[in-house]
Length: 65
Image (cartoon, rainbow, N blue to C red; front, side, top):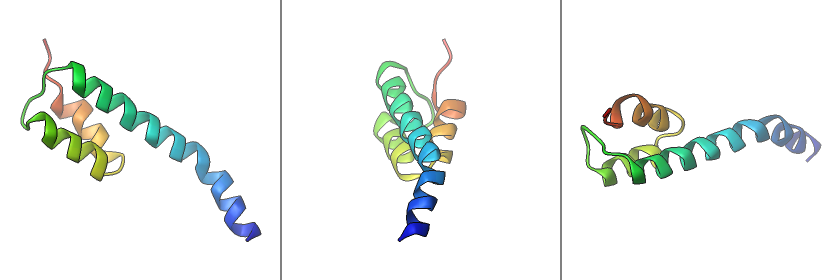
């Protein structure tokens, strides 16, 4: 039990960053125009593919004005 708490303490900052990145991408997705996939497709990529889905959206999904 003690080892599990120590592991959770180590992973907590990464979990918080992952959730914050997903929230940022989903809010950005609502406001921005997208390319390559419809918005629902990007929602699935962001939510289902950890970290790399969010990064993929930020690099490839947002349409530049």
